[in-house]
Length: 278
Image (cartoon, rainbow, N blue to C red; front, side):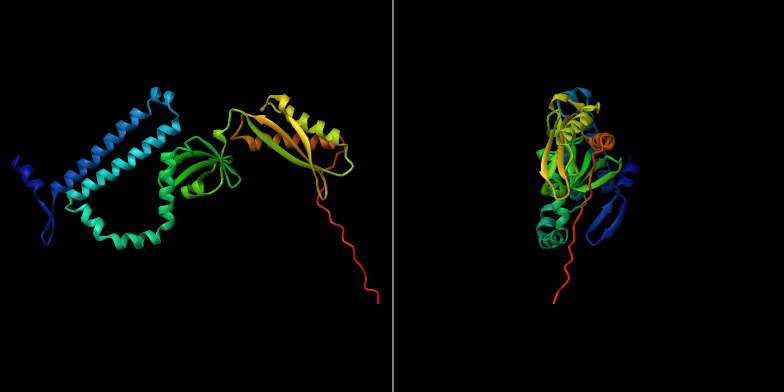
């Protein structure tokens, strides 16, 4: 026991009046281990199958992330106190420094604040399918500064949280089980409009992932510069694979247009050249 006391009281570093002992590092190690054990128990408790049946998995994840950050902040504060650092004096003395750091890391702090908003507000959760800047992503992880999503090409994308909170984002997971999709296509002037509408509706009706065939509707939406513009609308429960589904329907539409001698035009422009007659 005396040998243990001597080991713990052994001085590793002395600077002026400050002394760093083995016991100080030992206490810090204990705090870190206790913190990790507490977080492990909280995680096991929150992510039990029974709880996941009662709450949305994204809600549980958001709650755990908030608890984790709070617990680690408290643990770090204890470690600093053990090292002899007065938290209140440190904050007061570094106010000007924090202002400078804040200006230099403004975007980083913006991302962190956005992460806190996402975790607390829970408008976006893990496993939600989002459309950001035209890309469809399935959220895998929401962090304090960045979030991670998987796109339809199975590529992991790191997204700054501020991009989610400040930009227009479509959350497909907030929709009902059936989501409405549309495909736009143009055909040459002079084509049989009724025939085109019938082909568009038949093409969507043939796809197995299209739900409620009665709600499929094709429309003539515009007289374009080079084409008659049509749109076919349909419902489906497929979200993450919607690009593949729409591609399949476009292929069927193209094949039926070929079979029925219906042409999809390319943009054309007539140029008239007048000679200067003097």
